[in-house]
Length: 339
Image (cartoon, rainbow, N blue to C red; front, top):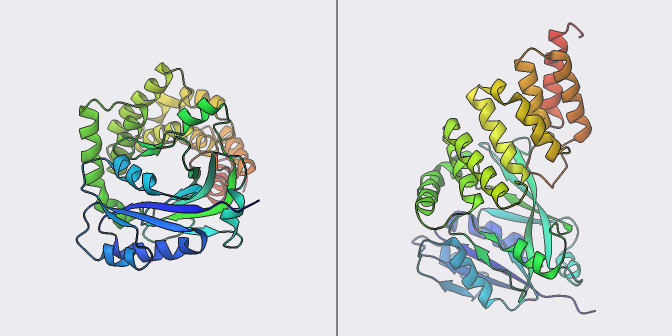
């Protein structure tokens, strides 16, 4: 069987500081690179041309999806890998692995993504999740939504009668764009674009979720709860179970607000939907601890240890199934005089 060819498709703007590291990490694995630039004024184009002649200038029209789709339309590979300039690709085996993995009958493949959140790239301050970053070319895939774009994977997979959850391959993507300084630089732009989309005809359940996420990181927790609840309702009205990360954001916001007792019963309903989601169990434990229910909280945090940190089906904060749960176990035992 011939190995499948692989195209890297990216969009960039003023990414000279990080682009070289990204492209160097991907170069051993891909057969071509297609980079769409939406108006860089630094040295981004010079860096891109060090790696490929397929550098396309595209006037910015307010839609990340349209820019990405221009690159996808030019790709000649059997498969497409998409990255951002603030990401680094890591393959757990050798450079041929990606090509060998893409020779089967799958349409989509997931990889492990690690999203760092602190001042430095510390694995103890990160979230991880399986994301679909590899898709078969010429299969109808395209990016949708003007900001926080995503593949129309649900539409294509339903049409093909295949499972929504694609296999996870031994590839990792390290994402540095949520770190403190990087996020501050993008926060105002993201919120402005999301509010513009919200005021327009572009309405979809993920829009409220991403708005809630921006409000959360801005410390506007009441607005975050309001928006994520709207997102949950919108998914339910579609006849869909809301994705687990919506509940993670909801209860993180609730705990930050300090009015968790109002939501004590509702978190059990979320756990019924996602019984293997360690973050929800951890948040329940915190609610119980703050309410003085130390024995039940202790049992909950012990259960977090059994769930661990490695479930990539959910957006999981590192440590809630290990070190942070252990810290709360110690606090509970102190309250119960069990140390």
